[in-house]
Structure formats: C-alpha cells, structure tokens
Amino acid sequence: MWLGYLEEYPDYMTQGRSLEELQENLKDLYDDLTGGQIPNVRKVAELQIK
Image (cartoon, rainbow, N blue to C red; front, side, top):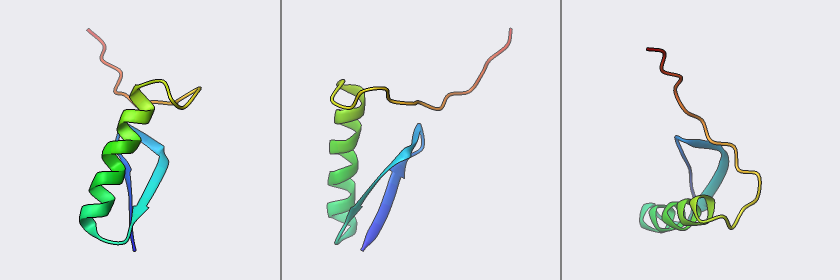
C-alpha cells in the first residue's frame, strides 16, 4: 500500500495499492478539495510580508 497527501492540504490523506493508483487518488482528492466537495477545508500557505 502507498499513502500520500498534498503538501497544501496535509490534513487529508489517501492511499493506493500501487504508485499509479495513489497518484490517481491524489488527483481525485485535489479535485474534491478545490471543487467544494469537502466543506471547511484547511489549506496551508506561506505568509508573505512586504
């Protein structure tokens, strides 16, 4: 089994039986997180001070 998460969304993990399946599941997870499918998503970002 492979486990993975998106760097911008470390609270959400997914898995796959192969690396290819994990990559596919990560793409699906990204679509769900950015498409409003999952409510109250916490995104990590860098603070830039000018």
